Each structure stands twice: as C-alpha cells, then as structure tokens.
Image (cartoon, rainbow, N blue to C red):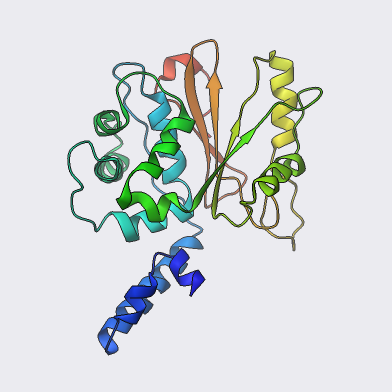
Length: 264
C-alpha cells in the first residue's frame, strides 16, 4: 500500500475502485508510472527566457524538476489533471509552464517565465525558496511530501565534501527514505581552486559494471546541480540525461555570461 501511495495512488482511491474497469484504471496508472520511473530516454528540453535578468532562480529550479524522473512522472499523473487552483496558484503556474516547456522543446523556442514569476514573485530570489514554496499549496502536497530539503553547512576544515559526508547529513535529519532530496550547500565565498576541489569531491562515484546505479546513500541518484555564479549573481544548472548517465546538459538563461561553455 505504501508503494502505491508513493506513486500517487491514494488508499481511498483503491477502496472505491469497484468493478473491473475501475481496477483496470488503477492498474494502468501504476504500470504507466512504473515505466516512467524507469525510463531510459531523455526528456525533450529547452532554454528559458529571462527578460528582466532576474528569474534565473526560477528557471533553474524548474529545469531540475523537469529532468527528475520521480517528479516528472508524478506531476504528469497527479497535478496536470487537476482543475485550476485560482489566481497566482503555484500549481497552475507549474502546469502552464510545463505545457509551454513541452511546446518550446518541440519548436526550439525559449520558454516564457511569466507564469512562474507571477506565482513565486517578481525580482531576484533563492532556489531554496523556490523549492520551499511547493510546501505551501494543497494541490502540490502529494509532490511536496516527496521532498526533503537538507542544509549542508561548511566542512570543519578545507573545502572538500564527499558523498559520504553529504549522506551523513541526510541520515541525521532522518529523511533517507525521501524519494527526492534537495541538498542546500550553505557555503562561504571560495576561490576558483577551492570550488574545483569541492566539485571533484562531489562528482558521481565510479560504478562497477554490475554495481547499483546510485550516487548518494543506497538508492539516490544525482539528477541536477544548481550552481551560483557569485560574480554575476546568477544561477545556472546542470541536468543529467536519462539516456546517458555520463552526459549532463548545461542550462543558462543568460548565455552571454558563460560564453564558450559547452551545452553538454
């Protein structure tokens, strides 16, 4: 039962699913979700518009959700079928942007960000704030309950953080069973050499041919890394491809700030 509820199939829905057709619908939903959660084909992708040069925190937040199998599959199943939630609704903003993203990916056009700005707020913000807003709306509660936000404080010495140390922080908060974990690295300003040291320490582990496909703990896999460019006060994000775990897509809604950067 717990596994079905994780997939968005509520206990009450199972109890009221009378008859062959109703049960077949529940079974079909579970099968479709299972396929999506195990997909090996990358999602179509697109860049975002940033007309006011202040919405990078929202576009990187959205990109990380779009490229996460768990969120993507459950959003399509749970949130998209819902009726409108009213003015400035976060659920409606996500749904509208979701549909715009799909169309933009097909037409190779940048995605408008206005719906996210209207719901999350105009001006510059923090990605952790964007994730936190998911908790504030009833329609998004089934998805928000899948998330655990884990603050990561600076290490006692040096600028190295290993995956083992990160997982210890997760264990200390008691959220190791959360399907989606957002690690909020609360680090001081660092020179380029220290940033490189930190990045190398956080790189996904080498996997043996017969090993489990995990990066953190026993079952979690890294799907996105949001980075803050302190000099420009700008967020960018790297998102992992589903079709090739060694390939990452780079998203930056102000391309002029990262000239020469490879897309993947």
